[in-house]
Length: 394
Image 1 (spheres, rainbow, N blue to C red):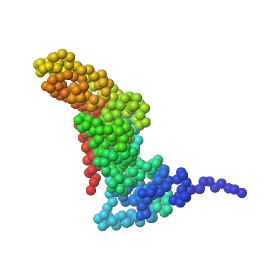
Image 2: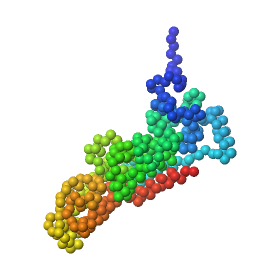
Image 3: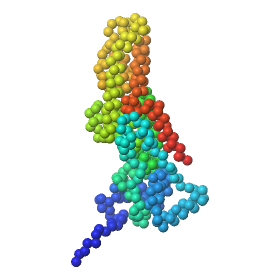
């Protein structure tokens, strides 16, 4: 007679895994590793001491997983012995910049923005269930598919895997490292990724325009990077990078923003659309007075030169191409004068100067268009995040 004693606990083994079971990672399986991390597709046999050195989250979780275990107690005794000999593991205090969202000036910021920014929570979903794999503690990284975790672990173990100065690094790697280093508090890696992104999206108008002319970034066109990086910066709560990334995305046609596969939280999408409208309005108002500016400059210079404003038609047209743009690169002074005006050398130089001065004024207002503080404040916040990350280095 058949009896049903209920479901039996599945015995974990590395032999003949089914298609639904994770498999050992080809690279991140160290024979002397003393803990196994489990994701949807990969198992990683790694070292508690190395991960604890880099991540306070893993350090805390390993302590929870090993709580009450005789084997773990013996290991803790070994750690105490190493401390007596002057070798101590690092246990970093976590100081996140979650509170910086309080500085954002958008309505309803206190609840919705914090919820969006904390999507990538620093609290791990690990739990001390006592599971083992071939006699080693097994830590289930719930919800992780494995690809991102493999990138994070390789950045820890392999010196040549990630460099913050290498802009050929894939966008997928950059995003994975930012999100997971934030979630598990790998502070050094997070800082390096933030530095790399900030160098490609500087808060200076001239520096931004110079980089914006480059076609490729992180293995894709720059335009394909900006929205994904904005999405990741929101999830990873990198407050200081949000306005410059909003600006980079604002130059896209509204249809590209609405149907972009990288979806933003609703309130952030609203911020992008409204900020884009304000930016376009400021540029349109400025473009509309270009002809008057040319006449004023010519009069102030008392210009009598042939081919200048006082010598007949000076307006060459083409201003229509500048209407509706949200890119300050499009209205760079020399570019505008070359395409739209006939002017002598003296008046030309004066008009270029006036246009670029007004561009700088619009640039200064860009953070406010998106509901943030000024560039100086944002640069200070960015410098603080970087200094904090570097400060724990030994």
